[in-house]
Every structure is written in C-alpha cells, then in structure tokens.
Image (cartoon, rainbow, N blue to C red; front, side):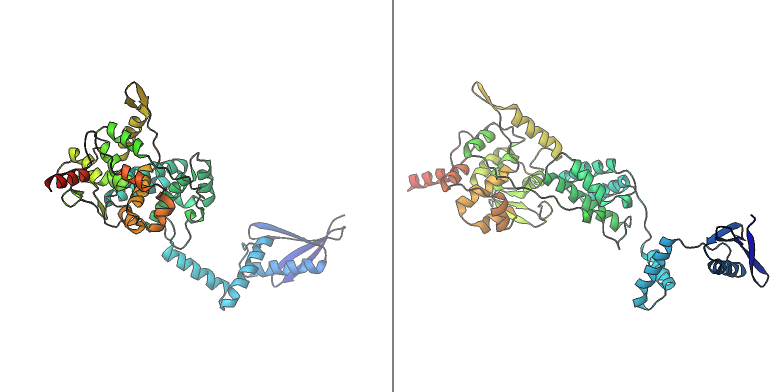
Length: 404
C-alpha cells in the first residue's frame, strides 16, 4: 500500500510527511543538496520536525549540522560552566581563542632538533666536558627512541621508556634529570607551552634504595697509589686526601693548588654546588702531587671523562703485580670521597669543618659519606706516602729535637 502523504506548509515552503501502515511518520525533504529523512512515531512529533526544517530552509541555513547526542551534552555542560561567570558560551570561546593566539604560538620541533640545540647552548655556556658528554649520551638515547615532535611526547611514554632500561633506579633518575633540563629548555624556546605542565613533571622520581657506604682501607689505598701510573695518581690522591668530586678533579688546574698556602681552591665555576671553597692541602697529598707539579695547565692529562674512565678501568682490571702474584684492584663507586669523609671526620672530630671542606651540609655528610672508623685508622690513612718517604710532620719533629 502506498504511504499516505501529509504536507506541512508555511509561506511558500512545503515539507511532506509520509504515514506508513505500521504507524510510523517520515519527514522526507531536501535540505540544500542533502536529503533529510526523519522518522517519528506520532504525527505531532513529525510535524515538529517538519516545521524545524522549514525554519532552517527559510533562514538560509540549509547546511546547518544537527547536533549528535554527545555534542548536545558537551554544549549543555559548557553552558553550565560559564553560567557562574555571567558570560555567554560564545564570549568564553572567543576569549579563549584570543588568549591562545597571543600566548600559545608555538614552534613545533622534533626531539632530535631540540636535543641538538640544547647541547650547542650548553657548550657555549662553557659547561664541563663531562657534563656535556653525560647530556649528549642520555639525550641522544632519548632522541633515538622519540624522533617525533617534542610536544607529542607523553609522561606515560617516558615512564615506559625508563622502566625498560636495565639500569639502577639512581641511573634512571639521572636520565629523568636530563629530560627535565631538555623539556624546560624547549619551554624557554617556545617549543612547548608555558601555560601547561610539562610531561616530565608527571614522571615520578624513582625510589632509590641506599646501599652500604664503601671505603678503602689504608692498605688498599697504599697499594693503589704505589702502583698507579703517573697520569692517574692525581685523581686517586685528590679523591683520597682532599675528598674532591670527580668533576672537580677533572676541571682542576695546577694554579688552583696553592702549595705555598697549603690549600686547594675549588672555584665556583668548577664546583658542583657553584660555590667557591678552600680545601686543605694535607701533607700526604702534597707529597704525592709534588713530583707531578706544573706551573700551569690541567692537573689531569685527559681532555675528557671518557678516556680517563677507560684508563682508570683498564688499570684496575689489569691487576697490580706484587712479586709473582697479580692482584686485581676492586673499584668501589665514589669510595675515594667516602673514604676521605670517614677518615677526616675521625681525625678532626668536627662534622661542620669536614662538610665545609667537601662542599656539603653536615646532615648530608652523615647520611651519604661517613663510615665509622677509628682515630688510629685515620692516622694510618693520612700517613700514606710515596714509597721511601717519611711523614713530613714526623721529620720536622725529629729535626726540631735534634736542633734542641
């Protein structure tokens, strides 16, 4: 049976409604170049839809998109959010677009591009070679994994990348620190928005389980220094008898060691804490450095950390020959600095003084560096001298006694 046609007419616009045998009513007309068919279960509901279409046709808005259920819900929620502020939804949208236009004009860059820019900037700043090598290694590794736009990198992706690394939690935190520097640099260059939190801020710092503090015994240190090649001796001696950090030793120059005043100046530019400090040039250290002393130039012969670390590792692993036996020297991470803190504190019994010499706070000294040793062990440690030499203080005492 042919469907019954019912017409809704307003002015010169007519929209048909077709009544089917099953009780449905279908509004069927053209809206611009698009055919619109809307089915309703009652004639009244169908007539409402017909009049709505007539209104669209008469106002020239034939192409207006009908909102979906989700779009209508978004519209309702948006209206609710702006209502307390006394402005229309359109005004709120216009103000937001204006704000983003003024402050959100970003230059989109890939991660490798931003990494290269950061490394160049740091080199121009004059940061240490070791710091630059560290950043280059960590950030290039990140760039290889994430070659796309930096603003597309998410916190979840960074966390997953760090999780897959087969390294310690402390090392993962070091990578996180490098990434924090990268993302802040990108933000400063307007490659990332300044009005939104950085992805790296949502990456939690790894929990680090503190291990036991390791130090060397006086016997181990005597063995190391007595057989070390001359190009490694300054590093071992400065770590053991001055407590300097690796980065500080690598940056140290001979003119920083004031033999006449018995002090070592660690300038702000060379200190990790960017704070100048004076470290005592103890007698044992003076004796180990004297044969190697130069007027100017770097104390370390290596131009960067990597070849130094390779030489140090090779020496320790190759073993120290003692008569017919070969003794492998076990390298302990940061143990030179730990040893200095432990033996020096046992010697002077003044945590504030030792912390000042090391460029730390007393609380950090106790928490991170100190191992319990006796005064006798401390005396043995600071009496370690080159083979065949006597303690200069004892020699002075003997001369004084002989003169008397």
